[in-house]
Amino acid sequence: FDELAGTDPEIAGVVLDELARLRGGLQLIASENFTSPAVLAALGSTLSNKYAEGYPGRRYYGGCQVVDRAEEIGIARAKELFGAEHANLQPHSGASANFAVYAALLTPGDTVLAMSLPHGGHLTHGSKVSFSGKWFDVVAYGVREDTELIDYDQVRDLARQHRPKMIICGATAYPRLIDFAAFRSIADEVGAWLMVDAAHFIGLVAGGAIPSPVPYADVVSFTTHKVLRGPRGGMILAREELAGRIDKAVFPFSQGGPLMHAVAAKAVALREAATPDYGRYARQVVANAQTLTEALRAEGIRPVGGGTDTHLALLDLRELDVSGRDAETRCDAAGITLNKNAIPFDPQPPAISSGIRVGTPAVTTQGMGSGEMKEIATLIGRALREPDAAGEIRAAVSALVTQHPAYPRSTDHPGS
Ligand code: PLP
Image (cartoon, helix red, strand yellow):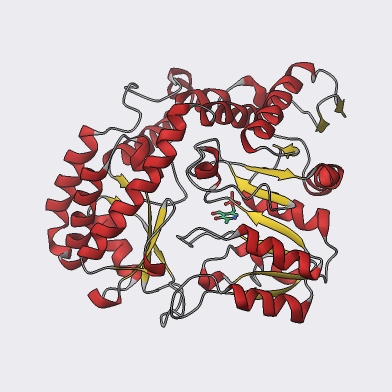
């Protein structure tokens, strides 16, 4: 870090200010976490220098014998941890991983059945502003209005009617477990591939806290930076028979040289995720999300879908008469970072929305437990009802994060 500060004080200042922001408030964005200093060290390593187009043992550049080891170790760890037949660690992000899965299994114009964005699906599951909705014929399923749970009858009916070539499950804002066996049986009935986008919950799977999609899916794609606590990036698991198609779709079809520092950092995260400590962490993430959700319910904030089985809750703010947008701003002023989120059948446009999404991966990494979750719910309730009390709430937030600091052992910057 001293090198950075000496060469570029401006960017060093940005890095330090961001660390202070992370440490100074409550980070409740469900898709964020604090990676370990070991992951950060791999990310900041000289592996960034190496061009390694291709795959271990089959590169288009010389001098890859050392970086090959990082990728081989990472692939072996991913296969072992998830019980997968094939793993590709090269996707630069979750969206890149999904792009590669479409490229491997489909041709533009093919029909895909996926969860609608307003009901919790991701942009790459068929939104018109993404390649998925522009180049593919995407039919959307959603949740039932009464239960706010995935409507499996609707999924089956739409599959029979539209005969999709691929069905996608997995979402960005769905708090309950997904019935992978039900999706498998629907996919089998209509002869479709089953792709599970496990970006949000793969870390819980890695820690054994929720069931795995791997035995059911043809392909599982995910990001490595959410509950899994790895570097920002993507990964794909697949059945052996699809290995060649997936690998070619990542490189050379959609990407060039892999980011070998990120591949190595993914390997580090996979090693960490295989430890008993990480299993305890994953179970605590879920327990914390459940405690937080129930405590928010006691504050008069309704959990969508009746609660959570995962790391996140989606909350309907209509009883408080506060929009998602205002809630995000009020919480931000109080030192609580979360995001506004549309709820299913939301009467408000997405930029305003009637809900917020909260997640516990980061606060659990900080060592917070059930007592802190109850306190956080009280602070959120107060921030929403009393915008004028932002200063007082911020002081309480500050006390909480001082007791449970992010990156506690490092004084300037982790990895330095
Ligand atoms: N898929 C799902 C379900 C996601 O939630 C996300 C990101 O939030 C992505 C894909 C895309 O990941 P990235 O932002 O790394 O492209």
